[in-house]
Amino acid sequence: MTPNERWTTIAVTVIILVITAPPAFAQSDTSRIDELERQAAAMLEQIAELRAELEQAKEQKATPDLQGLRAETVAARQAAQRAEAAASEWKDVTSVTHLSGYASAEFISPDNESSAFVVNFNPMFHFLYSDKILWEAELEFEVEENGDTEIGLEYSTVDVLLNDNLVLVAGKFLSPLGNFRQNLHPSWINKLPSAPPGFGHDGAAPIAEIGMQLRGGVTVGNQSKITYSGYIGNGPKLEGEDGEIHAIETDGFAGNADDEFVFGGRFSLLPMPKLEIAVSGAFGDVAVVENDGADISGDPTRDYTVFGFDASFQVGAFDLRAEYISQDVDDQAMSVAPGGGEWETWYAQGAYKFGQAKWEGVVRFTDFDSPHADDDQEQWALGINYLLTPSAMIKFAYESNKGEAGEPTDDDRWIAQIAYGY
Amino acid sequence: MKNTILRIIPVALLAASFLIGMLTVQGYVVAAEHDATTQADPMQFSRGAQTWANNCARCHNMRDAKSLRDDQWRVAIVHMRVRANLTGQEARDVLAFLQGSN
Image 1 (tube, helix red, strand yellow):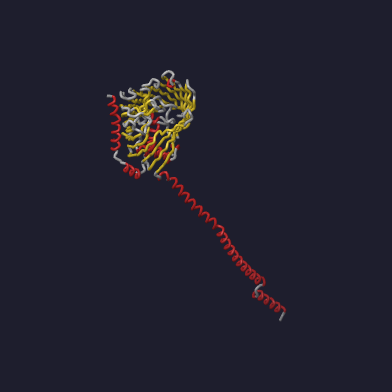
Image 2: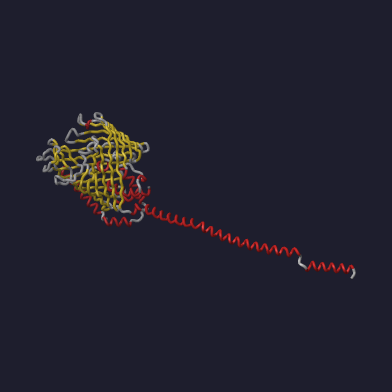
């Protein structure tokens, strides 16, 4: 073999070996890939295990929160149900009660007598059943000069709503004769701190009655209306003193010593809103049941009549009203107090609101006449009110009184009052 | 003569009260059934506002609807219906107005 052939042979062999034999580095990479694949598979297993553990941990951790959340949801739902029930309770319940009333504190300074503070408290109770029956009552608490507290039952009635136009009222009710006693006397409504002379106790206007009453109203057309009330009651008592009738007591009495009832009523017409014209009347028989401070019986009865007229009109900021009422008892020759008499009074009042309706000026004239000169009184009353709220006000008033000389009815007075209706 | 006239007035009032009341037909039970089936009246609120303005101030200052709760108004309006001789419809209208404004 020649050297060229030898080198050629060697070269071909090397080439063949290079071509056919796998390279050493290739064998090394394959093992690394296998190793990497094993490692990757192991890592995937670990990841899967970790993920499973994580999910398990999450579930374990979330379970208490989920339970709490569910409990809170249930509690919230129950609370909402209770709130809904409470919110609609007033609509569904058949019996409802309500406490209201009014109170006043005042300072009175007469020209010729000592000045003093006085206070009144009149709670009112309302018990309503099924929007058909209302029992209502008012108490009056008043502190007297000696410190005792006088308590009176102003009224206590069951009101049965017979239909849209008629209500049956039974019990002790405010006299429906006239307007002041039944609607205007509460201190938070009365625009002056005092009642007009003759509209208080032992005056000309009946105060209250125990008996039964029917009352209501009917609309006539779009703007007009009539109202009516009629009653039967035990009636008043006559109080004799020194052979005369001293006063007609009309506070409402449970007894009926004279065995005679009184019938009466009021009829009003409202030809247009805020204008009311009314007439009142009552009749019956009454007797003297108290004479010189002692109860008596058997005194013969005599005729008793009441006549009243009242009107009111509100226009703009003005409130105008007037009222007349008289009680008359006939003579009775066989009585311990044979002479009869007439107690009559009237007033006219004007009020005007100003200063964004926070202030109110009032003027009123009253003339009260009775069979006893020492009770007679003419009065001019001027007042200025400041309304803290629509139902709470401060009143300042001056009364110029003209009565029998030396009597309290002749004493001018300053009065300051705080009144609150609640 | 005066006494005769004065006696006629209350008798006439009593008779008129009975007559007017009875002529309105609706009895106690009928009225209750009527109330239970009363449908919503879209004009009731405005009627109530007008009735409230026309009637309350005839005697006293008008109180804010928010001065009482709805359930308290329910009682107070029945009290005022009796006192002011409101009709049943007027009372329901005013109640709807006050409760709707509360």
